[in-house]
Length: 232
Ligand SMILES: NC(=O)c1ccc[n+]([C@@H]2O[C@H](COP(=O)([O-])OP(=O)(O)OC[C@H]3O[C@@H](n4cnc5c(N)ncnc54)[C@H](OP(=O)(O)O)[C@@H]3O)[C@@H](O)[C@H]2O)c1
Image (tube, rainbow, N blue to C red):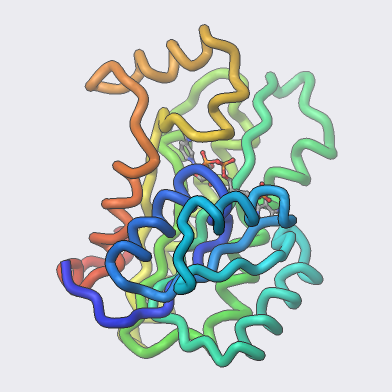
């Protein structure tokens, strides 16, 4: 896969899939900016990667104010974005009858509103021919118990990504979606063992995936090797 000094912005790059993707882009020689809500995870992430081509930006993108902070930082740093990976997300699992308004809003704000308006605000900073990759989930098309809100956020994201692919095609910007299931990340490490075992059992390979395995898909979609792939 060939890249050439591309500028990569990863929303939610401080842990898990986003961090593995950041590391993969750094190893490919790119300039990478990762975001997170605070220094708590960003600082260890920067230490782990240990490369001056990796920069961190603090922005809680679940609100328009946080997205404005991010846009300001991108603008001030003069970053012409070649790859935008909209990856941040949270999952709060409960049956419909026990779901609170706060949990509903937190998931829609973090998983949908954040990506929609970050894309909107960063469109002027996207280079012609750039690539946008959303992290959705297999949950978008599944109907597992207790995932009513989370799955709905990911279904919404899929539709937004498909429409963005059509709206941005005129500038040769490709927009695609990765839809993992069952990846062993920090978020999943908080689940009880029986839930993790269940997550592994729903995959064909009967194991959890590694964040690095998802990162490789993001790199492929962002590369010129995927030059005819968009809206997928
Ligand atoms: N792991 C899986 O099995 C799996 C399966 C399907 C889909 N996914 C999706 O993959 C994506 C990454 O998940 P992960 O498993 O790698 O989880 P993770 O390790 O918890 O990573 C989530 C990332 O999102 C960031 N984030 C969360 N809320 C944010 C906010 N309001 N503003 C800015 N950043 C925020 C986190 O940053 P801070 O915490 O540092 O703020 C972190 O960098 C999510 O969209 C998730 O839904 C995961």
